[in-house]
Length: 85
Image 1 (tube, rainbow, N blue to C red):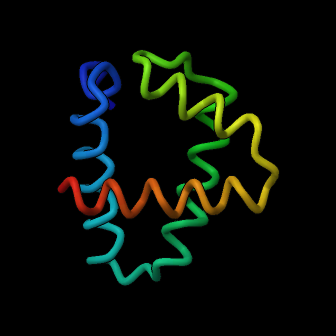
Image 2 (cartoon, rainbow, N blue to C red):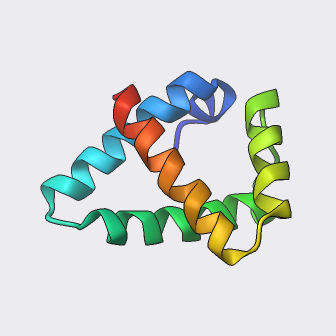
């Protein structure tokens, strides 16, 4: 992933939106995409330092959520990303 994508939240949403489009084109269901997004969110929360205030806020929200709430946050991020692309 290009580091400049992670530096700009709008570019990040567009990048994620393109990945959602690819997953949909491959026949993945919305639930499958959300499950992948949940795993990615967990990885990012534990392994990647937020690059901007929006990512820092998202990490704080993610870290405060239980597993069910994280799945909801992931679904919302998938929708935001899909609309951004």
